[in-house]
Length: 212
Ligand SMILES: Cc1cc2nc3c(=O)[nH]c(=O)nc-3n(C[C@H](O)[C@H](O)[C@H](O)COP(=O)(O)O)c2cc1C
Image (cartoon, rainbow, N blue to C red; front, side):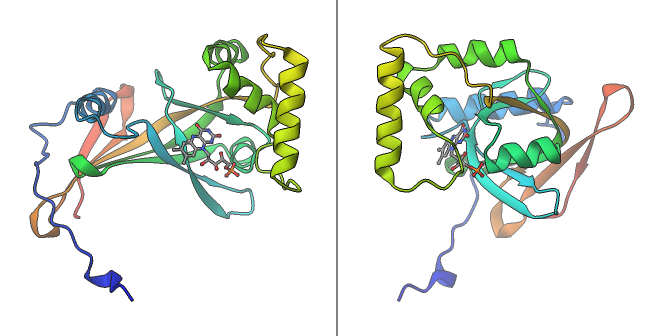
């Protein structure tokens, strides 16, 4: 049996302090994201999304970041578990883990649906097979077997016959509007750097160091 408790890694690549930190967390995110792209990480846009049901039960899963404007945009099925959570309890937290850079970014805030036209535009830009897949899949519902999915997909293929399907009404984007960011850089002896940005008055952000 593997001794899991013995698996350890030292973090020592870089440091992160207030001199290095941009005053605006969106700019700071952009800097780190660019570095994640430059480092050719396998899934730089993958983020863990935590939601909470109206009954207070949390759940998490990975989704892909599709844009940053006034917030962090991702796309999904509005009738999925996360979709229902976010519509009924519009707050979320996302976490990026860029292991090769020994970095974590956490973002928390309120949630809004993106405008229908915005979702339409993104839906149209996806590969045709992904569009058919979104139409065919009742995300997060129990299905009898794999065959059900293959059959439904084939029906959608035949129905649209190489044409773009309209975006399903229950498929679209959400935008996380950040109230808090935290940037984590792994350091020696577990004395990691953690800088938290909290929204303050006049759209200014207060930066504080947290103990690791
Ligand atoms: C790398 C990766 C990327 C994913 N991207 C998305 C995504 O952008 N949107 C999405 O709805 N699900 C995505 N998924 C699937 C979700 O993790 C999850 O299985 C699905 O959305 C159902 O979640 P729910 O039942 O909690 O709603 C992704 C999974 C992985 C592993």
